[in-house]
Length: 218
Ligand code: GRF
Image 1 (cartoon, rainbow, N blue to C red):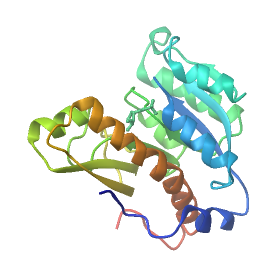
Image 2: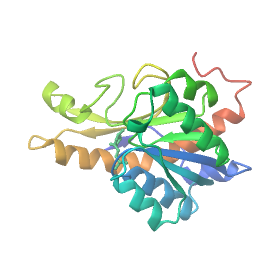
Image 3: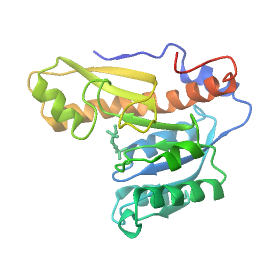
Image 4: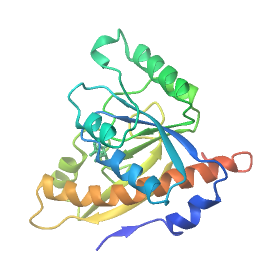
């Protein structure tokens, strides 16, 4: 049993966007969400282009995934920056140089600063492997197992300064099975991530088109 709290089909949302969304995707590790977003674009479900993939770990598998899809990828190794703000300045510059309008965090494991948030107001999204506001921060799947919850899931939300906070755009629920390990539960959560992240990007874009009429914080 899974339940996704998204009513319209993704294909009903996305074609209404006049211009393709121009995405910068930030990832630190595996990059399977990057792959899912790229697949949604390739099969016509999401009207967007990935202008640049930014990653911070030289050995991250996401670099391979970007290369396989011939997506431009830029390594911004956090160890070479003097501060979080300096890293974020480089992210802003790289994203703007690439022509990106939206910043999509897909397993980005660095805390963000006001430098990034102010450069892309209400244009930065994140995906987190729990039903926020439960289990923010690292090891969210382990946290859910330790708490003994029977349902967990994943959340796409706008990024604000406080970690894993910000208005929620989409969630999907995933049952916790009696014999679940962190790995088995995470695998089922990720299947839902691949479904809701492209949809949430399309929803956020539609909300942005009506941003004069909608206050996302109320
Ligand atoms: C995802 O589970 C996401 O929720 C979390 O980091 C993980 C990234 O996975 N923020 P991947 O790198 O996209 O495979």
